[in-house]
Image 1 (cartoon, rainbow, N blue to C red):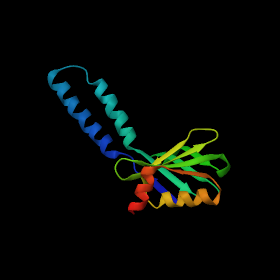
Image 2 (cartoon, rainbow, N blue to C red):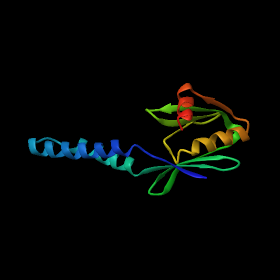
Image 3 (cartoon, rainbow, N blue to C red):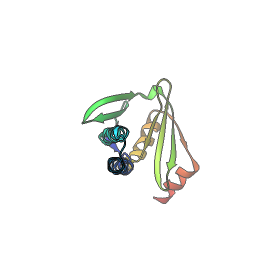
Image 4 (cartoon, one colour):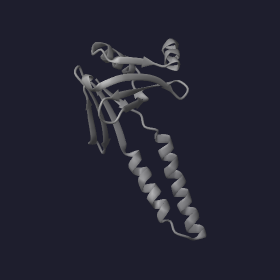
Length: 144
């Protein structure tokens, strides 16, 4: 099943607006605007990044995409997973950190739809993967 990870687009959009505003201020009062244009370019690139997460029967796939072209694709097999740690981020959002033997751990926050966390728990139980739930996460589970 495919899930999307919502990026924090609000922060990126506010960075772009701030950079454009600062560019106007620099042009009005004089000075170099190359630093602001660099920040604007980086913010636009970050705004174009998309994240995708797939749960299959035999593995998990984490992808980072730009213009719908995969630039990073990480396949995680159950034998490579040490544990899944479910935590709370923010006020009422769930997150999971998948710790792997080799490579970079994968942190998944704000998966859409939220049922993805239940599917990850089912995947972990099916493949006998250690599940750790923090106290805050358990509170979020009781609230639904």
